[in-house]
Structures are given as C-alpha cells and as structure tokens.
Image (cartoon, rainbow, N blue to C red; front, side, top):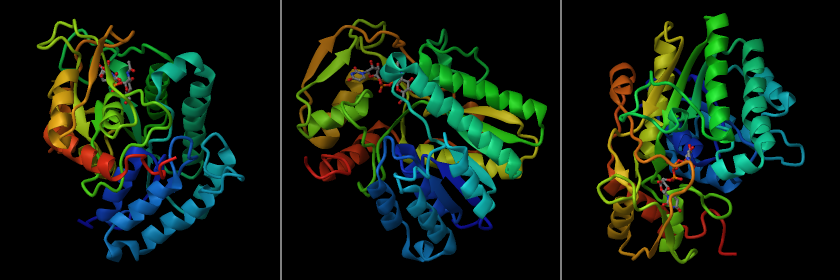
Length: 366
Ligand code: UD1
C-alpha cells in the first residue's frame, strides 16, 4: 500500500465498470488519479461512490482532489469536456498537469451495436485513441496500459489462449481492438521510447465487495452476468441460454470469468511494470483465471450465491460465439507477478451484493 511516489495516472473511461474499480485500487495504492469520461455508458454517481469507498486519509490527499476537480470539468456535458474525440479536451488535461502514465479504458464494447453501426465504433474507439496518442506524444507522456480483449483471439483453435496466438477479429468491435493493438505495436516500433502494455481481458464480472459500485449497462444487457443479475432482481423474466449442443460437459459454452477486482489489480501490476521495465516495448498479457466455466455452471453458482431461482430458456447458439475460451495465465504471472485470487463463488457473491443493494444500478427505480 502507498508505495508509489505520487505518480500521476490519467484514467480514460474511469467512470465505467472496470474504470471505477481500477481507480479505487489506484487510490488505495497511493497513486494520483485523473479521470476523463464522456459518460456515454457511465454516470457521475459511480465516481461519487468511488470517492466514498476510499479511505478518508487518502481522499484528503491532493491526488484525490485533483481527480475530483478534473472530473467536475469533464462532467460538464454541454461543453463535452471529457470526450477523447475532441483533441482539445485531452489537450486541456495535459496542459494543466504532468501525467506519468495513461490507463486507457474509454471505448464502446457492444458487439451487436458495432455490427449495426460500425462508424460509431471507429469514431469512438479508433479516433479517440489516436487523439490520445498524439497528445501524449506532444507532452512526452509515453507510457500506456491499453484495454484490449480476448476477442482478438477470435474463435481460438486451441485453448488455453496464449499471447502469441494469431489474432483475428469477428466483428467491427473486435476489429477496433485488433487495429488498436496493431497501432500500438507500430507506434512503439517507430518510437522505441514508448512503453505500452496491452491487457487482454477475458470475461470481467463481479463487483467491489462493498456492493457500492458494479456494472450498470444501459438498456438490455448483452453480456451474461448483467443479464442474470437483472433476472434475479425481477427486471427481466428469464435468461436465454444461447447454445446447449456445444461439445462441452453440459452443452453450454465455456468462458474464463474474472473478478473485476482481480482485473483492477492486474492494471496496478501493469502500471508498475511500465515504470520498472524500460525494455517492456509493446507487450500483451492475458488477464484471466485460466479456468473455464460453462453458462449453466455460472447460472447455478449465481443461484447458490443469491438464493434466487434463475428461470432459463434453452435457445440456439448466438452467431459468432466460440465453444470454449480461456486464458493461459503464465505470462502475466511470470512477468507482471499477478494472478487472479477469486473464483466463481466470490464473483457471484459480490455481483449479488451489488445487484441486491442496487437493483436498478445507479438510478432510482424508474
Ligand atoms: C462478449 C463479446 C466480446 C467482448 C465481451 C465484452 C461476443 C461474441 N463477444 O464476450 O467480444 O469483448 O463480450 O465483455 O459478443 N450468453 C447467454 N445468454 C445471454 C448472454 C450471454 O447464454 O443472455 C452466453 C453467450 O452465448 C456466451 C457466454 O454467455 O457463451 C458469455 O457471453 P458474454 O457475457 O456476452 O461474453 P462473450 O461472448 O464471451
């Protein structure tokens, strides 16, 4: 705790699901944090709760106040001061203070929406990131942790997925992650002083153990756990289980679910690695547990944790879904010194605490 010498981290998308959990851990570890977020899929309330969760001693420290004052500006939607698509917004942040590194979460991630509206994905994810690199270069901040995804493995031919597998994308969202990985590699190759870590997340679930922050997607959830959670609290009638004829133990698809607090700690490990290793170049790491869990196993684990029955409907496979995907965790363990601590039981316990305390997410019941 508190070992860093007040390094100042810019967190893009810091009001979102993974962002808020990571900001809590960064503050707990003694980093100064500034958030930039356009609130496209997040709310101000989430950041207010981050502030509540942090030890009062830390919240009195300058870094936390800095974070808040920057936030106050970025929250002004009329001025849209928190949008990476506006280079001026990023420029304002960098001209006011020096950042030691950037953790770049901001981006859109709904696969179906990306198929229907690819330009929106290219604009947000690609243009936003290119603007960020330009400004970082201008202000000589050349350390970045980037949110990539296991989606870059496509339908893996072998499991566990290793970082040196061939990469492919199955849809426009996946293509933005793949392109952004390639862009990172090209920039670092041309300008070797850059240090970039690409973190390939498997399936982030769970919530902070307090139950105060968690995932709150707008509209009908696309992903499994937020959907189960909304069935459990009565917002949705039943879960559609997509695929029951996969060649797996119980016929449903297998994924590598990872507790969001483990994921947050993976970012701390990555930031520390950037500062410690001048030879890191541009390197990718999987963040997963290395264990596969089927959809039906996840449903029963959640039923057990919540004491709620989750009615299910067995449906055909969802187009584009892979049979089984899970991570090789060796590289992250060896090079980042990071390993996931939590299992499916804790993921469901903490997700249920968040869901039962906040059945409508950050909003009041509509
Ligand atoms: C999905 C995206 C991935 C993205 C990630 C972001 C696809 C093909 N992949 O991963 O690119 O990075 O989300 O978090 O969309 N399921 C159901 N019923 C539901 C929802 C999901 O049975 O209502 C099943 C799915 O078919 C899948 C598993 O649950 O087998 C996990 O689905 P999901 O949470 O959407 O994650 P991924 O598809 O692994």
